Image 1 (cartoon, rainbow, N blue to C red):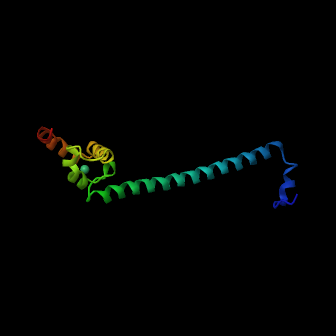
Image 2: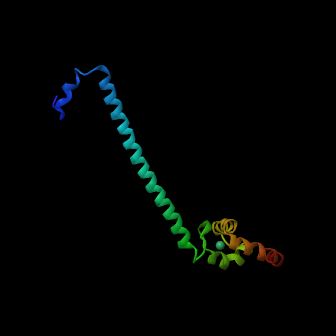
Length: 121
Ligand SMILES: [Zn+2]
């Protein structure tokens, strides 16, 4: 028994309720510390999340929305071949996803789509 706190044996003659009170206080403090740590971690994650969200929004607006892993410019460029079904399935799927999610390209798709399908099919 080489414990650091030498006052431990002084607890023994205490009134029965004292030990429980101390234990409860220690438990409560541990829980508060845990909550504080968990809270700060959650806050950090939230800050990172919001920051990342803003960064992606601000960062990707000028070159286009890379929905489906493909940029608007590429979608526009590949659209004729997509319509003609000349693209491989992977690219075609990406464009499909992009068109479904990107409001601008989706608009363009619907506008030029009706004309294009009449021509090419
Ligand atoms: Zn787009």
